[in-house]
Image (cartoon, rainbow, N blue to C red; front, side, top):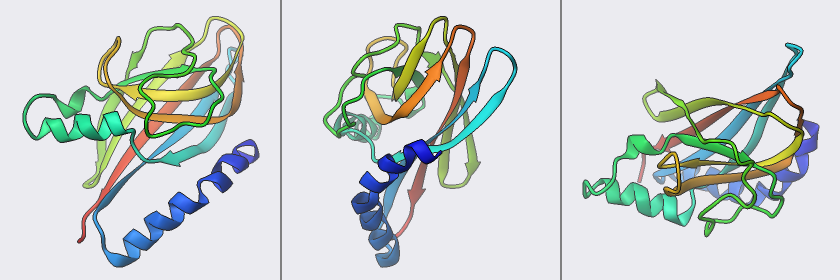
Length: 173
């Protein structure tokens, strides 16, 4: 968790904007990513909160198109990870360096009235330093709805990571 401190510090300006919006009662949504590392030997390491971000431009456009019935919001559920290290940006449309594993469809829930959650476990068959994650609208290609870059999670053959993506919608305005 301490390794992700630089990410949290870099997010302070955005978090301040979110807090101001909350104080002013402005409607908003935010996303966050949490993870648990599962070692092949059965050891589990709760990595906690990896990052809080906002959705990509392509993701917001995709969400807006769902109101026109040209896309389905429930398809934003395919998770993937990679080893790219450049900071995530709202203009991103793909992972920088995907691991090459197939995207995994998450288990979708609505844990409270204003939260969408997708949880998936990604398995690794080799050694890698996982530093990025994304959620897409399809199992191949599709729209990158959200993209997170974080401190390396080193995995070995047989390890897996359970990623929990939360999107919180706040009423107001």
